[in-house]
Length: 190
Image 1 (cartoon, rainbow, N blue to C red):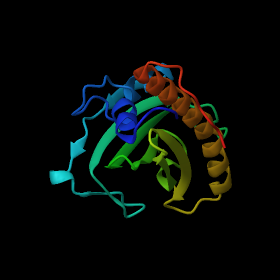
Image 2 (cartoon, rainbow, N blue to C red; image 1 turned 120 degrees about the vertical axis):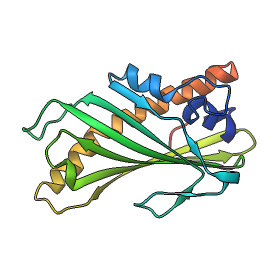
Image 3 (tube, one colour; image 1 turned 90 degrees about the horizontal axis):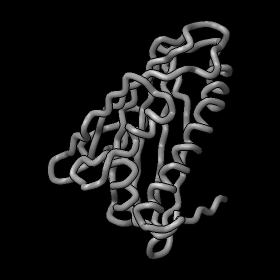
């Protein structure tokens, strides 16, 4: 993303206006995507910026933590279960000066078959490129907590469902950053 700093990216995309002057982005974006019964908690901040909140899966510690809960209509159904799923995200974030912003989220589901068998670990890493551009890497990992014979199907369905979601989120984030900079904004894909 061109012409945006790490701090600006955090404030525009992830802060949700907590301790910043930016308007919320993530909650309204989820609503635009059809999410219902949305609740985005305020960020809990660690004392003195110390990395105090630990992500159980990765063992990493972060400066802040929040909870995001909503429901969405499933697009793949494994042929069983209700068409609506509950989503429970625990998000962790750290901003390292103007060099890096890491947002990790543990996504747990309810109301779908085998929801107790897995969680989805998502990671957005924004890194500074040059003086005022950033690169974004997004990763998704299915963390199986219990063994299931449907592991391969769960993994493939998760990939099918989450990839377009994160591409849409990235495009919306890019546009929001460009609008804040007062320009069209440019994107370079690798």
